[in-house]
View: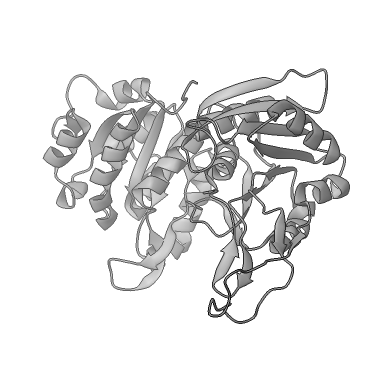
Amino acid sequence: MNNWKSGRKILLGITGGIAAYKIPALVRLIKKSNCEVEIILTDFAKNFVAPMTLETLAGRRVWTNENFDFSIPHIKLNDWAEIFVIAPCTANTLAKIAHGVADNLLTSAAIAAHCPILIFPAMNENMFDNPATQENLKILSARGVHVVQPSEGDLACGVCGRGRMPESNEVMLEIFRTLSPFHDLAGKKVLVTTGPTHEYLDPVRYISNPSTGKMGVAMARAAWYRGADVKIISGPVEINSYGFEVVHVKSACEMLDAVKENLSWADYIVKAAAVGDYRVKNFSSQKIKREGKDELTIELAQNPDIAAEVGKLKRDNQILIGFAAETQSLNDNAHAKLERKNLDFILANDVSAPDSGFASDTNTLKLIPRDLNEKEKIYSGLKEDIAYEVWSDVV
């Protein structure tokens, strides 16, 4: 399956903020993602990161004011690049770009850019909140420049506040969101459930399954790349939640309540969670002791079917996508769930197949639409690549 993120051409501008120390890790990630990178370094940025370090990681020369030569790099680099990323971007450089000042190689390249520009402001909180800085950000945003708001945390000046540049992996996510071939979910709201549920017997024991939430997060991330606002309702599993609002739940009943609470918000609902079919009928408020018990009988009660509940409640203009994780009779079971739960699409997979299902980075899925005029489709590959393709067909 085609990976649209591979082979992209990234022009990276580095200005003289303390956050420049993070950039070698970013360059390493860019190369690890099989992308090309050209780097422009301002004179002040050289105080925080050495050109030789960046050249070693990038595998090519770093452009500075000193080697600004007859080749007119500020034009040539923009003709080559698919995106111009400025990270970190100081208040000074931000002001120059906003007002058309081209007094060094980086700002000259920014003025000449005809590819998307992605800026990561990073500075002291007072500098960021200054009305002049905020006005410059508005000017750039109005021109179509993509500005990523800094995060809050400990700043180099010793205070805790807003002004931190995101971590390198988060910068990469923003780069790929800007480079996404499609932004057809812009303005749409996508609600995704993911991960397992835990159905507790007593305070320390529960019934669950091996779901890691990877497929649900892949669906969420692909929707976010395509411009959607994304909210995840996650069972007890660790996920990379950057860019998402996350609601944490444990049990199936908690997940149902969270879905109902957010249902009216969503345009698309993706039911990717591996929800437990049963819960313990009689929960023990104290730890069940083994002493004197050769056997333990646990009585189970059926959990609510969240997808079926949503199928009853959803509006006509909401799209409901379900999953069928099966070990036998894949087509029959998936078609039955599609009808029974009033789904618009179902993604069926054999979780017993090699390199598929729970915990795997890869998967093989079959998309079955409710509309009989639409064709079924099979995807195989990395989960995030599959998810991107699924959204192409669903949208």
